[in-house]
Length: 173
Image (cartoon, rainbow, N blue to C red; front, top):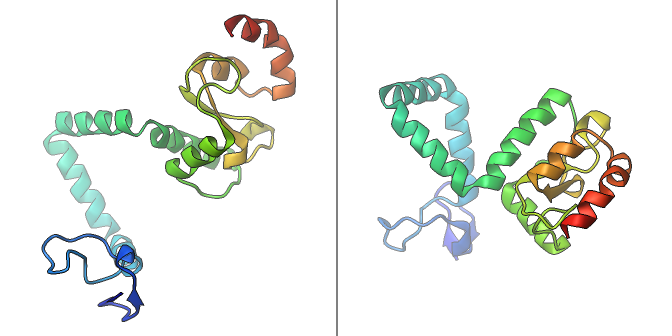
């Protein structure tokens, strides 16, 4: 057990971030307190942070573009979820927040790895009930899909789309 320097509570070592500069290899403040401190700083200094980001990007846009491309390539599901969250906000839809890791674990438990509709690879995320048809942005309404199936389904209800594509989907298996 270790005492947090901020809240004073004794917590297990797993509740502290690693810090190689400290004698015990852990930060003095627990993750909860550090997260709260970081959130307070971001809220109080949002203009300064945004200006610093703009300056960094303007100083070397090629490096920023390369970093963004590398992040998107190594975090494909998280990148896709960013786009979905934007569309959720625009559609005014509801749903509980979740991370890409939460979604990956949910799909693993449900046995989903490739396209849900055909034997194709997982390339995009599909809302079973589309947002503009009253669907929610929650894990139970999301499935992996290939680009071809997701693009052809668009904002159709599954019950309307599936009968029209059964022959094509059967031929791909």
